[in-house]
Image (cartoon, rainbow, N blue to C red):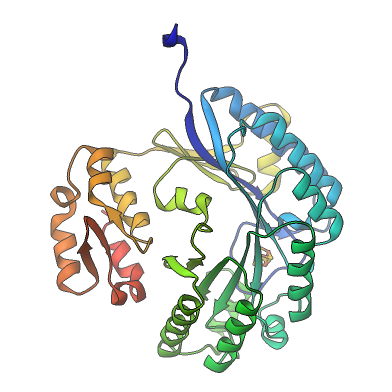
Length: 385
Ligand code: SF4
């Protein structure tokens, strides 16, 4: 009898909404300006992608869902409702523990919040970036400080308490005292979760062009490190424990979905340009909207590329991603997952990084030192073959 009962695989899922109502000067995410885009058609075919995909994976269950972008809240309440109805209809989410949606301050209205709440969304991640109107303008955001407070208030009134906000440092015109003020304002909201990133200059962004013309003036590397240190100190003193390079939370509010990524777990990716990782296979969907929609119109999946990872590649990613977590990599878990001790595979690299003061071994874990946290990228790169 029991031989018919197969154990379900528990994975996560990411859903991408590639539309934005404005384009920020630093952003290189996969997104387009929403005006004139076939948004209704996108929502319908996104739901179709979920149904086609899940028909191929009947033995899977999804325990965390994340709708990101772009700007998911650029959809109308009606479009959000249709999307979320599709999610419930086609995704196996009976045992869902975390359902996050990204929201932009200013886009959060009562009606949209009610739709999200009705469909079981239990976590909001808000792209705040800064509490200074002048800086927000400089980076191409259209919300203001007032919008941030209003949106958090609206989210709470709508019944959301698990709210995270993103902040960025090393922005043009940003000084250490100004960043400190942003952190203070952020903490005054008393949220359970904060994510703090240093600005990265990406190709094909307005900032990159300005930088090439010598017209972008950013805080120095030293100021960048000071800002990061300040964020760590202030968030830690406020009881928001750092659990990943950029993420801080009250105990019990760490993002379960993001931990799936850092722990090299599996996930489906739905939407234009989305990535997925299922059964040692990484895949990527077509990015341009029409290239994403066309195959779906004839009931085909819009997959652009697939790659089957070797055991070596999977182990590399385990370290590359896992070391982002402040607790580090469990040697016991590594052995259980890959049937080989981590030091037998990466001993040389690990000891080199310990010698350089970037890694340390503690209670069976291999983790970044304080210095390693500042030089994370150097550490992670060392594990890539
Ligand atoms: S940062 Fe967010 S809101 Fe701004 S363009 Fe990028 S995806 Fe859109």
